[in-house]
Image 1 (spheres, rainbow, N blue to C red):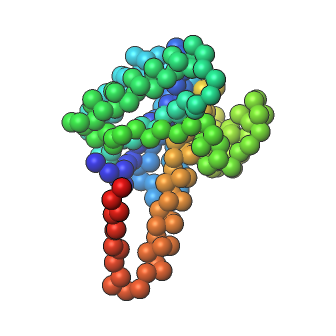
Image 2: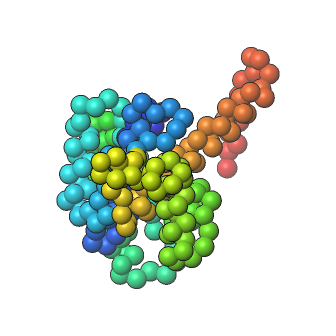
Length: 205
């Protein structure tokens, strides 16, 4: 499967006990940004598995891509070890149910650094998290009123809270990286003479 026809993205901010979870809908979206269809700031593993299995069996057209934050090399405590185990379970689940479903395999893994670089966000701690939320709101309407809204008039990010923001950040970072890669590829193709073709040379080691 390819990810060219992906219409639903699942964002996961894994944790040792619970994870941030977002289901991001792109149905009918071409160049713009989509909307959050479901979010959970503290999803249990049972919830993550249930939502992925539901999506894999859904009658809705299109493929599903899972975007998950990954642990970067560095200091390792028990919390990070347990988080890595959760990431492993996500990858195994995607592989298992993706064989006969509309899941795009493999899952897209991004480190926190890669996410921040894609969003053009820097800083530390709570201030950095605030900037990430502000960036995501700007991408979905420009301010809190438009992007989140209220119950009577919900915006595309209505219901977002806590670790769900980190899960959404992984999804949006993936979209930015993919869009930039597509633009670079298109720009490169436009510089080729008509009828020119690529020749791949493989050098033996």
